[in-house]
Length: 135
Image (tube, rainbow, N blue to C red; front, side, top):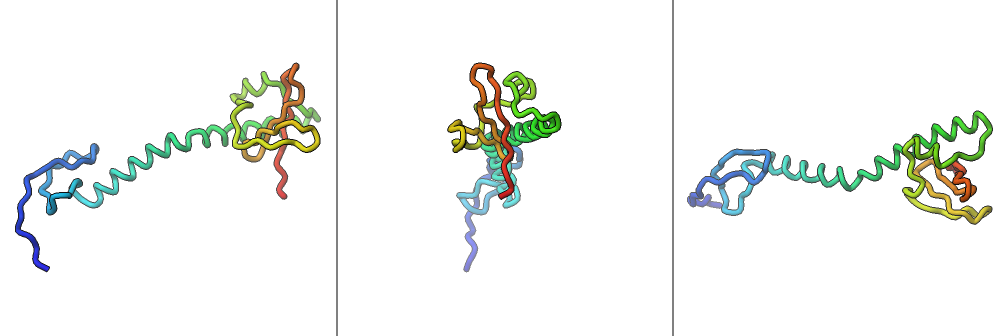
C-alpha cells in the first residue's frame, strides 16, 4: 500500500497536559503520539472515578469506625449506641449501602459493608450495631 504524500499543517495536541505542536500524518489525528492519547484518557478516567467512587470510600471508612465501636461495646456488654456517639465518630446513620428489614423486630437495618445500624429507640435516638455473619 502506498503512503500518501499529503502534508498537513502543524497543530497542537488536544491533551491539556501536552503543549507540543506536531505535524499530523492524518487529518483526523488529534494527539501527538499514542502514549499522549493514553495519558489523556487515563487522566479523564481517574477524575471520573474520583467522583463516582467517592461515596464508597466514605462508606468503607464509616464501616471501619462502626467496627471499632462494636468491638468496644462487646467488651463492656453494651448492646446499643447513641446518636451522639455516632455523630462524634463521623458516622451518618442515614447513609448506607443497602437497607434490609430485620425479621424479628420489623425494623430496617442500614448496612454499610460488614456492620449495620438498626434503630432501637427513636425517642432516645439509640441504635443497635449488627455484625454480618460469615455465612
